[in-house]
Image 1 (spheres, rainbow, N blue to C red):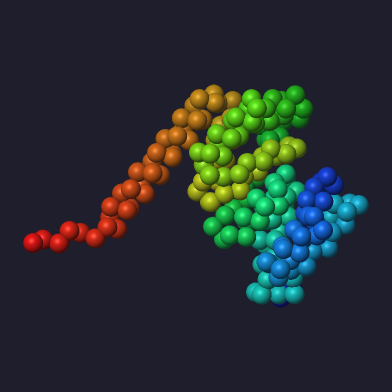
Image 2: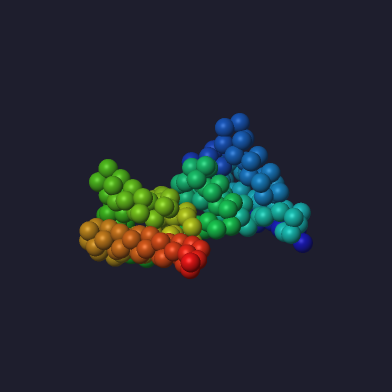
Length: 192
């Protein structure tokens, strides 16, 4: 069964999809066994695959969308890993039609000198991109959901400290779960 689907990216992100000397486009085509047709005038990118079974056009669509949402191609290519997901949050759900509210929420998520975004990335091991009216996250599925929860809390008006504490508690819990799992896996001491 063949596959053909188009996605539109902002014109200023088309060059990022192509990459230097076409390297990003070529790498994505080879990795996913697809072909990309890029219209640099409209920003429309068509992903084609002769067979869905042989290629992975859905993963390629995710990578193209991630680059269009502001991620670097290197970060977007992490979506080729089946354990990695792309989450997108539309900030208009929180800001309504007010441009001032949208800017305020973007500022809360990014933080002073990028601190808030950096803390979320460090505590969840995800990548976060605030671009236009959206916030996008690339990361392991459970971590991406945690980052999404943190960003939703900030967009809803929660204090930064509350969000950081929630992330820190979740990180501590994950570490404890790993320790307990490791202890359960270790071989029992043999009785003498």
